[in-house]
Length: 447
Image (cartoon, rainbow, N blue to C red; front, top):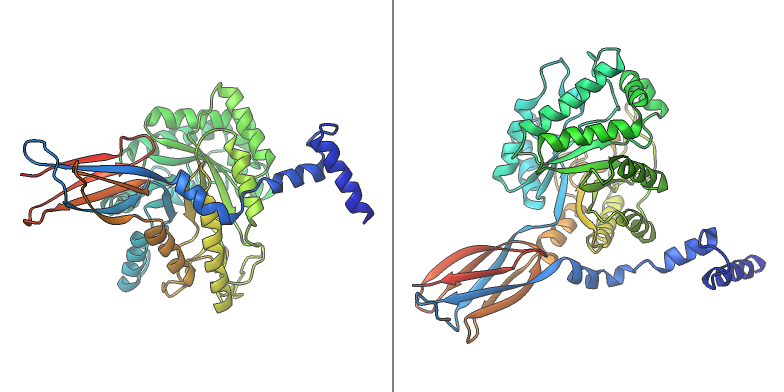
């Protein structure tokens, strides 16, 4: 009771202006009290993820045609719902390969393709460009936007790297230029620098001593600056991300230092990893992280989202030890997927979420992290997310034109197909896009 009254006094003094907000209890209280509850998410989604659209139907002379049926069907989200796509072409059974691809394209409009240097270019001068181009072209054919991940990360040294740090830095920058320019038009979104905040941690010093020495020799902020400069020059129209697993003020300070060094923000999007192997984030933390990085006034991407369908815990499955998916875990995963996606979709700064990994088969840490099981059958979480993305957050409607030949509707931001059918059987189709920046209208002229 004494602690309660002490905290209450601290809170009153803080709100009255006698104590700084940095007081830990008061700051936590004020922060938590400002978190919009999930019950209000539908209101935020209506406000931030939808817009009004107009379709006008006229005859050959430009006169409006009333009473015409207009079918409006969304074909693609503006919001990026994605997943890493690392198993493309790597499943030995064709039925498995088809299941993997079909279920991917039925849910996602965004794919992360692997550019880990040590495996991407095992032999110097022989990168996996041909394979990556095949994946990117398949995605392009199915309306899936691609992102390359990552261009610069000192997780593991390519075996052929030289010893001299300046030579490694030149090779690193040359690699960025080559990849970004080569894939222009197929891959125009890039995680340019990955996990710069803790680039000197022990694991990196052991697995990537040469790369880590190069990062330290160049300087963290200087190297990140050079990497973004190389990527920007290689493709002025590309969307460039900085990405990190740190979600605390330490990552904020790196972003601030980078901005001060360059004089402006060299990135277009801030990437936030959210591997939840140790337990799913509560709503308060989700909102706190979003608000922490919203201050930079750029879009936020949750680049690596993991919610388990088995036992939570930070451990890896080693050797023959399994980390199984369970029926109870799968139901819990589905519920948590709906909650977390709903909170993120309702935040105005979040414009993309990437799941990690698509299936339990070959998942990172051998964890039950997939939306598909090891046999590639869909878990309840896949069905739940599909229901959100393609049904509850998806617009389809039929309306009749009014006396002015006009139909107005409110829909989720994205691409649409509009089909007109008259009582005489005349038909015509067109496309339109709903966005916060466009005029959100379509005009159809009938004979």
